[in-house]
Image: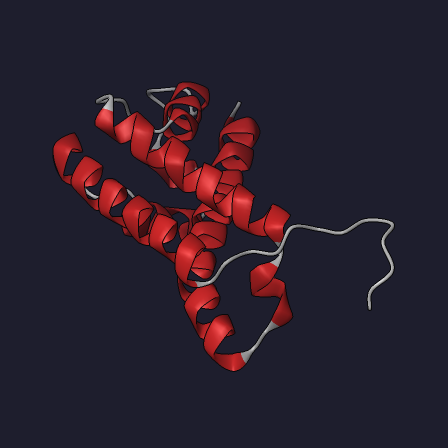
Length: 132
Protein backbone atom coordinates (compact mmCIF):
# COMPACT_ATOMS: atom_id res chain seq x y z
CA UNK A 1 0.00 0.00 0.00
CA UNK A 2 2.87 2.40 0.66
CA UNK A 3 3.98 1.99 -2.97
CA UNK A 4 0.50 2.97 -4.17
CA UNK A 5 0.46 5.96 -1.80
CA UNK A 6 3.87 7.04 -3.12
CA UNK A 7 2.63 6.68 -6.71
CA UNK A 8 -0.39 8.88 -5.98
CA UNK A 9 1.92 11.36 -4.23
CA UNK A 10 4.21 11.65 -7.27
CA UNK A 11 1.26 11.98 -9.67
CA UNK A 12 0.04 14.78 -7.40
CA UNK A 13 3.46 16.43 -7.60
CA UNK A 14 3.45 16.14 -11.40
CA UNK A 15 0.03 17.83 -11.60
CA UNK A 16 1.14 20.62 -9.26
CA UNK A 17 4.27 21.13 -11.37
CA UNK A 18 2.16 21.18 -14.56
CA UNK A 19 -0.15 23.81 -13.07
CA UNK A 20 2.66 26.00 -11.74
CA UNK A 21 4.63 25.67 -14.98
CA UNK A 22 1.64 26.87 -16.98
CA UNK A 23 1.09 29.89 -14.75
CA UNK A 24 4.62 31.07 -15.46
CA UNK A 25 5.26 29.68 -18.96
CA UNK A 26 2.15 31.11 -20.63
CA UNK A 27 2.85 34.82 -20.06
CA UNK A 28 6.60 34.34 -20.40
CA UNK A 29 6.11 32.29 -23.56
CA UNK A 30 3.84 34.92 -25.07
CA UNK A 31 6.49 37.54 -24.38
CA UNK A 32 9.29 35.31 -25.76
CA UNK A 33 7.16 33.99 -28.69
CA UNK A 34 7.29 30.34 -27.64
CA UNK A 35 4.86 28.48 -29.92
CA UNK A 36 3.86 25.79 -27.40
CA UNK A 37 2.06 28.29 -25.15
CA UNK A 38 -0.60 28.64 -27.84
CA UNK A 39 -1.32 24.89 -28.02
CA UNK A 40 -5.06 24.52 -27.45
CA UNK A 41 -5.04 21.06 -25.85
CA UNK A 42 -2.29 21.93 -23.38
CA UNK A 43 -4.00 25.17 -22.44
CA UNK A 44 -7.41 23.50 -22.08
CA UNK A 45 -5.95 20.79 -19.81
CA UNK A 46 -4.23 23.47 -17.74
CA UNK A 47 -7.46 25.45 -17.32
CA UNK A 48 -9.48 22.30 -16.55
CA UNK A 49 -6.95 21.13 -13.97
CA UNK A 50 -7.03 24.45 -12.14
CA UNK A 51 -10.83 24.54 -12.36
CA UNK A 52 -11.04 21.13 -10.63
CA UNK A 53 -8.63 22.28 -7.90
CA UNK A 54 -10.60 25.49 -7.27
CA UNK A 55 -13.96 23.71 -7.37
CA UNK A 56 -12.88 21.15 -4.77
CA UNK A 57 -11.68 23.91 -2.46
CA UNK A 58 -14.82 26.03 -2.92
CA UNK A 59 -16.94 22.97 -2.11
CA UNK A 60 -14.94 22.56 1.10
CA UNK A 61 -13.27 19.34 0.03
CA UNK A 62 -9.65 18.36 0.14
CA UNK A 63 -8.04 17.34 -3.14
CA UNK A 64 -9.06 13.82 -4.07
CA UNK A 65 -5.41 12.92 -4.66
CA UNK A 66 -4.57 13.98 -1.11
CA UNK A 67 -7.41 11.83 0.20
CA UNK A 68 -6.33 8.82 -1.89
CA UNK A 69 -2.74 9.18 -0.74
CA UNK A 70 -3.81 9.38 2.90
CA UNK A 71 -6.12 6.36 2.54
CA UNK A 72 -3.39 4.31 0.88
CA UNK A 73 -0.63 5.31 3.30
CA UNK A 74 -1.79 2.82 5.95
CA UNK A 75 -2.41 4.96 9.03
CA UNK A 76 -0.28 3.91 11.94
CA UNK A 77 2.74 3.16 9.78
CA UNK A 78 5.87 4.89 11.04
CA UNK A 79 6.71 8.00 9.04
CA UNK A 80 10.33 6.87 8.90
CA UNK A 81 9.26 4.57 6.04
CA UNK A 82 8.65 7.64 3.87
CA UNK A 83 11.62 8.50 1.62
CA UNK A 84 13.42 11.67 2.69
CA UNK A 85 12.65 13.63 -0.49
CA UNK A 86 8.98 12.68 -0.24
CA UNK A 87 8.88 14.01 3.32
CA UNK A 88 10.46 17.30 2.22
CA UNK A 89 8.10 17.74 -0.70
CA UNK A 90 5.11 16.84 1.49
CA UNK A 91 5.99 19.63 3.91
CA UNK A 92 6.32 21.99 0.95
CA UNK A 93 2.89 21.27 -0.55
CA UNK A 94 0.74 20.38 2.48
CA UNK A 95 0.35 23.57 4.50
CA UNK A 96 -1.52 23.54 7.83
CA UNK A 97 -4.03 26.22 6.86
CA UNK A 98 -7.84 26.25 6.91
CA UNK A 99 -9.49 25.06 3.70
CA UNK A 100 -11.09 28.45 3.06
CA UNK A 101 -7.61 29.97 2.65
CA UNK A 102 -6.88 27.48 -0.11
CA UNK A 103 -10.27 28.20 -1.70
CA UNK A 104 -9.42 31.91 -1.93
CA UNK A 105 -5.96 31.19 -3.32
CA UNK A 106 -7.20 28.63 -5.86
CA UNK A 107 -10.06 30.82 -7.08
CA UNK A 108 -7.62 33.71 -7.55
CA UNK A 109 -5.27 31.43 -9.50
CA UNK A 110 -8.18 30.18 -11.61
CA UNK A 111 -9.21 33.79 -12.35
CA UNK A 112 -5.63 34.54 -13.41
CA UNK A 113 -5.65 31.48 -15.67
CA UNK A 114 -8.93 32.55 -17.28
CA UNK A 115 -7.41 35.98 -17.90
CA UNK A 116 -4.39 34.29 -19.46
CA UNK A 117 -6.79 32.46 -21.79
CA UNK A 118 -7.86 35.88 -23.14
CA UNK A 119 -4.50 37.64 -22.99
CA UNK A 120 -2.63 34.79 -24.65
CA UNK A 121 -5.28 33.14 -26.79
CA UNK A 122 -4.71 29.50 -27.57
CA UNK A 123 -4.94 28.44 -31.20
CA UNK A 124 -7.46 25.85 -32.25
CA UNK A 125 -5.69 22.97 -34.03
CA UNK A 126 -6.23 22.83 -37.79
CA UNK A 127 -5.90 19.15 -38.59
CA UNK A 128 -5.74 18.20 -42.23
CA UNK A 129 -5.76 21.73 -43.57
CA UNK A 130 -2.90 23.12 -45.56
CA UNK A 131 -1.32 26.19 -44.13
CA UNK A 132 -1.20 29.23 -46.42
